[in-house]
Image (tube, rainbow over all chains, first blue to last red):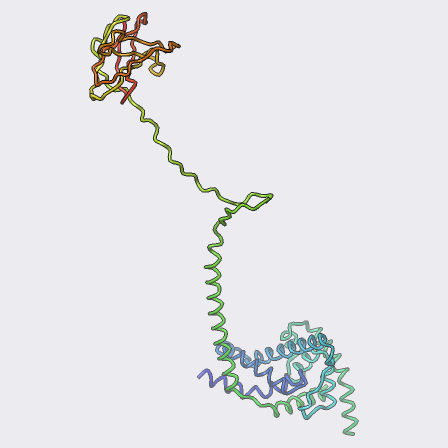
Length: 162
Length: 204
């Protein structure tokens, strides 16, 4: 019975969570691995987490932190061997690599987290601050910098459409 | 910036549509991880038990009996308690009932007879001490030996040396003579061989 409930939860939220995490990692394949790991961690805790108001928020937070950890570890690996570029390299398997995605990938990971949680997951500034454990002012400043950085890509797209 | 939000959500939706997930693999991974954790905890617990068993004996004081050559510090050798067999000291011989006859109201130089209730063979020598100071012998009394006319006599313990003592033993009774010039008072007479037997002699 518990497994069926968890299976339904997985079917309902796994694809969307992969889409969210893909914006953080820039790679859908890596996002799938991260979301898979988040759900693996959810299995032994499902009886408890299922009683939360928003079990999806728990899995999303785990996935966001895993993505940040991988990003940090990846940077360390890159800095250690100096052979791989420190900048983000889009996954060639991803078909869509538009200007917005590239601009997003160019943001620092903390800023990217704020952007994704606020604009994609529809969390308020306060909720983002609470989720990431940072001050609301920090969230606002990061959102401001992100808007400035992403505005160029949006203008480019507007020019293209025009 | 509604356009930014719409574009980001559209991008996320596009990624979500391309995603593929397998719930069964999630369950399998979770269960195998649980088994590994259980096995790991079991191994860890066993290791802790083994370590505890190995550590406990080392908490005992080390038996470092081997001396270190030129060591500036002494080894922590714990000297084993020395158990030596001490011979039992000679049993305190209590003054026994040496039977003395004609021992009351003796005059100085008078004779009396000592007999042994235990009928044990003893030498002919006895000690004479003041009853007030029985530990300080005053004379050695030599009992009468059959066929020796010089006996009985007394040897003063203040330096009269070189006097031969007849090597005679017997179960008694022995006839003893009080030294001449002895002050009036009570004196204790004790055997010098065998179980100590004592009796009181009164000199008037």
